[in-house]
Image (cartoon, rainbow, N blue to C red; front, side, top):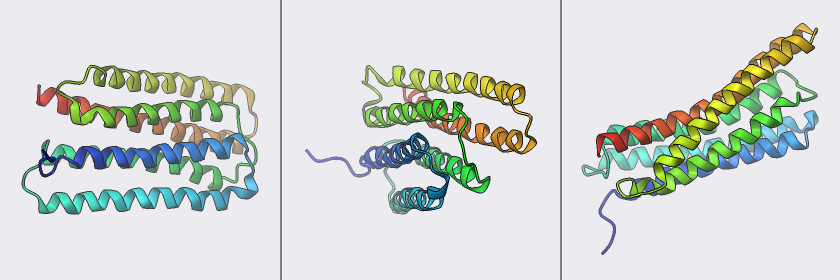
Length: 207
């Protein structure tokens, strides 16, 4: 028996997270071998990922506009696709700030944040791969909990990073720029949690 019309929305939303994972992986690659002189070129590659994700999202919205029957509520599909898109955008925003502020050397916390971001995106991808089976899945709630825990870990790192910044730096430019950088790093994990929260709401509404 073939899929019922509209059931591939789950697959399409899972595909959107692939771009979030690609963006996080690229950010990690850039930070691990950081070269300020290459940031402009790497930013262009990041933008290509973000643009492709936007195109895929618009394709899904166009499909949604033409169909009457959907596997979950239309509004939930719109909200979840928006939140997943926010994840990719948030990762790109980190790199944009590093480029705009002409960052030439990284603070150690940047790689710690990136590690949490990668894990959060990977967990979100697993969550979306399970989403189609949300009524029977034995792992989906654990994945939501894991993403929430990673967001809390990012919150703690944000607090530690900000304290370290203000207690170790006397350069006002460094303080201003890294204060904003840390905010945008943490925002990536917030975006992953927001997407997971939408999935949790869908499960609760349909239980």
